[in-house]
Image 1: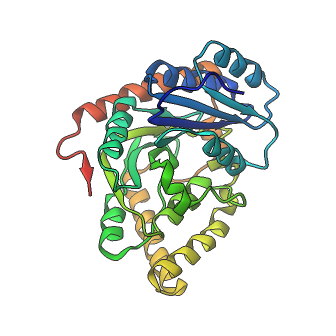
Image 2 (image 1 turned 135 degrees about the horizontal axis):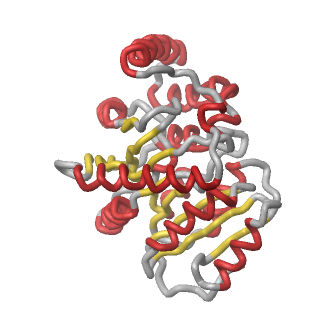
Image 3 (image 1 turned 90 degrees about the vertical axis):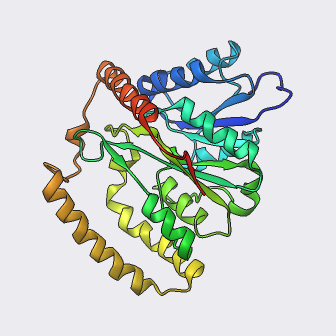
Length: 304
């Protein structure tokens, strides 16, 4: 289902959702309020039973979103792929239905890709409340620099991803077997011969909640790491055993960091319990933090 075609779409926002209407109403309204005339919003709903399809139909009829699909899917990756295939924009931006995004930052990234057609992908960092405590600015700059120097693949959060639609012929769609979809996808992207820039201002805040895939599928994350190890070995020629040794060392470093700087590094669903009202309040609070981080950022915006 879609509205009349737009002459030129420079950016497509794609978003998946399933039975998360209280979150979606907050996050999608923010996106709608910030969408520009040369942009479209594509929503893939996995067959929700909580009123999501009806609400999306109203938004479509009002011209507030430009395309939506509602049908049972086989997981998040299936939904993401449906959305990707429906996008018409030159540039594609990943949006989560329960996270906060800085739209001025997204505009800068969009303009960079439009002005620099040789680049396929932009990665960016953001804030996280992974342990249910205060926000942390998670940075992948060291990983990006190592990737530039040694082509060492790394994964990063999907909310930090922007890519050129024409690059899909090289990158492909997301892996339908994966539950940590963004981790597999970004790891695969950095394993390929693509041209990527890193945006140095914060773009998003992840709001972990009881319905987050981060919590739902945490117990299989290590299993999926095996797939990323294969990408790494193909890309670098270095054996998986070396990656496992490095991972053990990094695990010790993280443990020390947790002991020094975090009250607790245990991830448990009870830390993220919230109501629709508390989510809306938390969303606004984190949005203020994000936009302040964007405004306060110094130095070059892009690392190439």
